Length: 124
Image 1: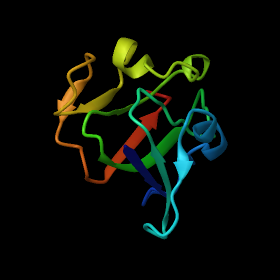
Image 2: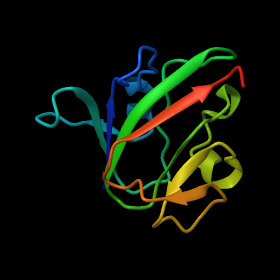
Image 3: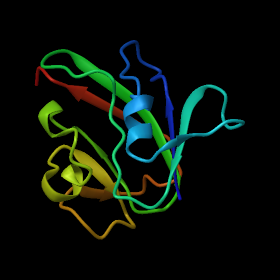
Image 4: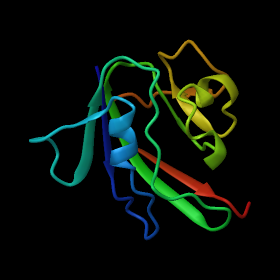
């Protein structure tokens, strides 16, 4: 299973996970976990959770941690591609994938089971 935890960013602008959209893709809310975050679980993917917020300008920030399945990616997905669960694997340009991920062209990083702060500055 995949376990996704999303916290408010320590910065002042955040992008909240769209829990209802995630549930429609197979994620389920987790209860009794870290109380200061949104917690979701899912069977093996590919699945994608997206933020409630889309932006053409300004800064969006997320703070995520994934445990369980070690192959995952985090990144920026254009709003018109948010329905494609494999977008980051197939066409992702801005983001990272865990060292354990074999698919995709995003840069690899030791991001599994650790908090990752993501910032998307749409004005740059």
